[in-house]
Length: 271
Image (cartoon, rainbow, N blue to C red; front, side, top):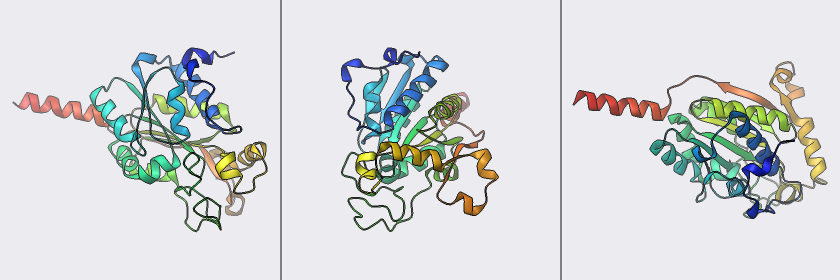
């Protein structure tokens, strides 16, 4: 039995997440991955912005920064630039990272700075009122779209790949062991690594969209998450309403802090 207590701040429990929320599953998968890699807690930093997902660092006994809305990647970039030896993990949400934090998300991926980003995608602003987020499905209801959302959703993983990330994966909280494996790979990859985690929000999203209960939402994940191997063998009709999970991109690119250190050394030598 894995001892989660050695990694958490027990004084901050019970947590604030709603019953049926998948955020706790992501937290546990992350802690198991950190433990397997033997990451020193004094050499790790968790950074978050605002939202349900961004409460995660408050429960973890490492160095933590709970920052302003959309700015987690900006703060994390500063930490990694100042202390390149640290393992920097960013925990954010679909609204926090790709709405108000959209430019930071794009440019952190473009720079390929060595950050591991866990992006909880629950299709809505869960904590701040149930508004549409950039990933709310077309036709889904939200507090700002009571008759259904008209906007097409972002493909977050596709956006990260296009911007230049070294590693991009998508997982879900129903397949928790697979999610742990993806996080493990992301932590080991040098460069900007994203794990998009599809996770249910029973309160802000499920209720408005008449999804019966958290169990039904988990069953929906089970039925719509498709492995990369299976996806390749499916027809266009079979793929409708489903999403790919697994490693979507794994490439080698120059990492920003190493390139910066190299440039500094070149300038010093030239002088």
